[in-house]
Image (cartoon, rainbow, N blue to C red):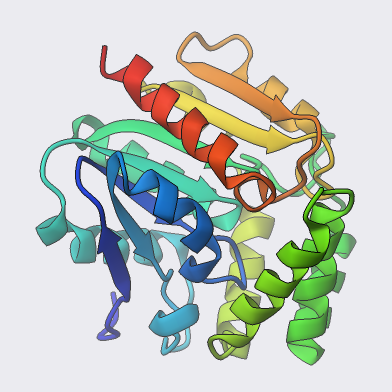
Amino acid sequence: MTDSVLHIQSTGQGQDLLLLHGWAMHSGFFDSVTALLSRHFRVHQVDIPGHGLSRDYPEGYLVEDLASEIRSALAPRISGKAIYLGWSLGGVIASLMAAHEGRAVAGLILVASNPCFVQKVDWPHGIAERVLQEFANNLLTEYEKTLLRFLSLQMRGADNERELLRQLRNQIRSVKPPQRNVLTGGLEILRQCDHRMLLKQLKLPVLLLGGQKDTLVPVAALQSTAAPSTNISVSIWKTAGHAPFLSDPQQFANEIKIFAERMNV
């Protein structure tokens, strides 16, 4: 736990929906889809500790502490069971929170989030550790350029690619980048993460949403995670990359709404 103040923006009315962004990003990347989701949900956009407007964070960066800090900050804002949605690194944190809170969580949505990001002998569906390290090194030296280049790969071929890239550039520049200890700490979380058993042990509805063009989380990772669980469903978008909610906010909002409706029947 830290003394830092966590930035949370809450909008809309309805069932509580928590949005956790990815590594080196911030909650503003959800803005376009939040405008749609807030018609049906009480949406909470959280800047993960060390990121965005929650930038100040001391040395030491452990996923358990992040989950605990987010949980404490959200408690006064949430009534009833909430849906947790995590994108990439945010999915790691959301999964841990769901496992710890059990009955307080209505459902879990993991967007482009691998339960085990790094390749292992029994898990070929991750990425090589050297690739992850290279990405982190580039973030430390050329943050804006590296992030924009990575996200532009995920947007390639989209009908509104030019407009999306303009929006992404503005989002990246809207806040200061995370500090070195946060970037390296986030890398370590991704490197060590292995939530394969954790997800299979969850008793709540889980949706794994990914893109066929994702260069970080392969489709096979999501399919392997879901099999043979009956409570885990998979949705793969053929034209999306690592950020489906950016490539088609309306489709993304529709899918979240359908998941919630099925879950609450």
